[in-house]
Length: 322
Image (cartoon, rainbow, N blue to C red):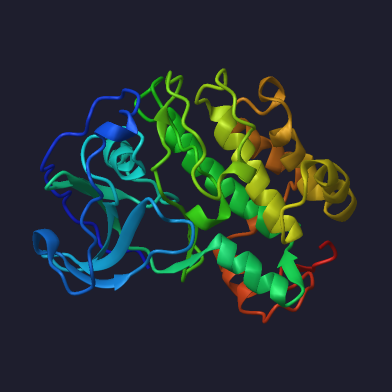
């Protein structure tokens, strides 16, 4: 379950301005490496949470001095670097809460090392769910894929509309950045690649994210279409249990899961031909599966507890693609 709401921590230093990274020769030495049992700013680090592919930061479950658990993320870099994911999350986090987003409570820096504090959500990442189901020969059925897609589309729409016309692009929508809480609530996290819409700086994909993003292009500015594309690839992975090559995807998805293909394939079209927003994408889901509002988080929890037995009642489908 989500941790109870707490007041944001005060900023101990302001985030740096948005400008290109300094030459490597000017970047300061690597930041301090934290260990379980230490107490930065009074927060007791209880457990390391870092997973594979997370070399840009250290992440811990910590006990907040005002009570309750939080997640603390420390940058592995020192000094001002606007491309640092922790600094980006610190700069773009906060703001109004949304039920499908993990809330950023605050952040700052300790001796030039940036950190950010998030609410703690007890659950498992979507990539772990996909792997566990695949090991049992199952994948999520179309209604559950669509239900997850709607929840994530709402989270993205919240980011895209934040601050009026100057919304945020998440920039790293992939299974490992989606948490399923114990109750089945879908939560998108990690604003380490977030950018204001239309930002002049084009960030390179982080480790492991390249296959979910468009091919790098200096002309591809951060827009809603970037997140829509990544969401489509994420949902295709859920429906198939793995990510095929782009060439095979356009054959495999319509053949094996035609309902999902109707709302995923438009996301993978060239940017100008994609759904113009996550809200438009949500309408595609409703058109493909008109009864989708009858499916919810409880159905997802029931499916994951069904021991991987495919069938209409469980909401799972037998994995038929490898």
